[in-house]
Length: 284
Image (cartoon, rainbow, N blue to C red; front, side, top):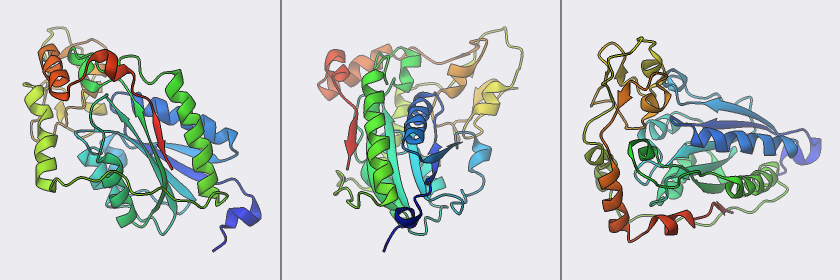
């Protein structure tokens, strides 16, 4: 089948969707957007972090392709994003994924997200991963500080260029299998809950000075944070820490997580310096 853009040469319209409670994935998405513009594509940034933006499925009719960018939460895309993907209708259109991660295990995020997108009717043509400051750095971790950096953005440029060629049909190759997992979904769900063992108490307002601006509640991607109570609901919080990062009065706090970072490094057999040598990677 000949792709219509091979004959009309019209710029491809790309839905560049991202979920980014603390901003790292959004930063990479913005760079990819700029690089796609250089490739004469027409990308539209779509932020699905706010809960209201995930209330309706994305209509892919105006777009020729999809790029989805998310942080890795416990080896997979965040649950709220996985649920959102299930409501999409790809209708055979090409798609790509990219992930930001805080220096620890990233697989099977590529594999599992590809499966979800292909089940939704998309055809995945590429994927990428970018080291980024870990969410728990807000509690004293020092994982991938100051990442992504210029070296990562250089990889993002190459990713945008090559993905654009795959979207247009100029390059018809597809990526091989991604690293899968032998773990059951039940086990992965248990791993997903481990972040709440590290974060022994959820974000809460401790400071007496708070103007009740409501930003914490407004930006919470799951509706978990109640500005009046000054606390997050245990049933809804995903420990993204967006409320902590964006509170203009620094009134929201979490426990000191420094000790758990040392434990995590030891468990992974890794040092901070070794972690920092990790590089962004493209899967084609």
